[in-house]
Length: 412
Image 1: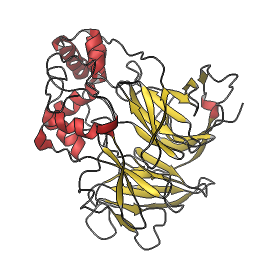
Image 2: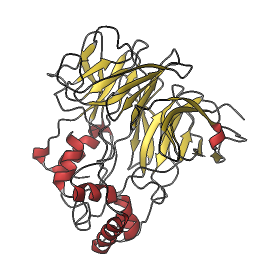
Image 3: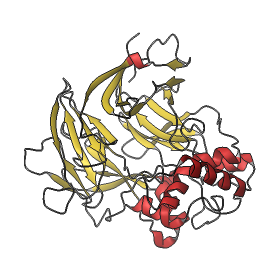
């Protein structure tokens, strides 16, 4: 992706104003495993329900604490719901506002927690806030604005997602930071988010240092990209803390690159050959339809009728001029990435048929030595945290009612 290049998303798909509004705001084997490479399909019977609440709207993030309690970030107030290990509700709290004990824009939970507690990152407050002890005094960890400018900690996944990933690495907190601004133009802004710095914050001293600058270590991601008639690529920034080091997806090399806390690079993990090599105009239009839908309806989350949706998809497909292999390069190959505390990596390939830009139910499970297998999760199970022997997430029923749930990877 070339900073300032305005050529790369086919004409008529997304208006820049819409995108601006969207982006600003274990080491154990899976069930029934018989070898280290064969595919595994997990069934609904493998899902264990912890608990639910009528206050859950949409779960944006989830954290599991050492004491077995689970905290989630809700899309609506109350922003935070805590479950005890027995599934009972420990607390529901978190209201919007500008007051001293209110939240402005919570955008994610700190993976790995801090001091055995759950913390949320608030984009507007530019701070981490402890959420797992609502009865205790408000505890806030401000990021130093002279080293991490306000507004620089932003997400790098789907343009429709406001979630920001942060994680604990040892005694430090890793945050993505980019100084790119919309004044540079939307393509350059998007490029800046993809090539952000991964910085470490010492919560004891407030000191900040750069662990790795993605713009320095990743090859030019525009290699192999052929612009057709406008826009920019919809690639994602994917990284995670994997035990005692960081892993970053490298699109050009088709690897998961590794970096220890000092910033020194360790051996990379080679990924399987790329499978998304061509998409039809109709497939491409369906994949990016949510972006166009939000533009047409004037906001994220609004919906069109089935007839209007089909009409818009057909119109989008008819306007596309790129060849199937050119359209495929616009899309991310993977849409999510996570690690367990034992260093096992989980990478979600894009699935045009099942989930478009959000991916489907199949993930790649990659052991620390690089052994890879495909794991298909149960229907309507959305994974949010991977630990040594469990996948934690949300199980949605036929009416889309969400329950906090987990899958045991050591059974079978």
